[in-house]
Image: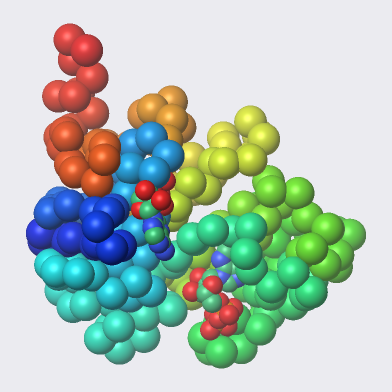
Length: 219
Ligand code: ADP
Ligand code: ADP
């Protein structure tokens, strides 16, 4: 599970994330919804230890991310897929992480085919990938260590409809097996099809938090 308690991030005079608290339970997909600039990425970067909070705390499976025994395997993370390893091929990206994480090499080709990157695409450099292909690779990377928790920032961005469809199925199956998912999007339709709960953020503050039924009933 993920718990976020009063997380705040200031950049100079600008408060990007303002006293944000929420929880994500095992077996559920939490949609983290808000317009561009709302503070979703900053919150996810704080949860995954990449950005130090100005104040507040967060924990994954009861501990700050960096204090997990094996964070790379316990938590699958996809943040800014456009930035990763342009000079390597898709297969190399996964194979290198498989080696550092102690994941069986066979898992790499299995995942490449799950996300639709088997065949020639796997041998091409990430530099030449479309955004959708980078998202596919990023999703494969997030699943690589057989994690219990997934933290995915805008994974549907640039994905084609077919990709969005299988990604939702993967996330649903993952949650139905007891996994915890935090999935961000700036589009309601990207999260409402798969999320059980919605945490809505605007201007750095939580503006709504509840089950999908609660939040979508009666507009
Ligand atoms: P979202 O992911 O919801 O689009 P972000 O978390 O990326 O939102 O950004 C929230 C706010 O924080 C925005 O106003 C953004 O410009 C600002 N911000 C994010 N990162 C930085 C940074 N490194 N320095 C200054 N401002 C930042
Ligand atoms: P490691 O080999 O230790 O996994 P990497 O440098 O491969 O380290 O990855 C650093 C971080 O970037 C990881 O946390 C991973 O989640 C993320 N990452 C790596 N490759 C990709 C990718 N293609 N798309 C999205 N995220 C990625």
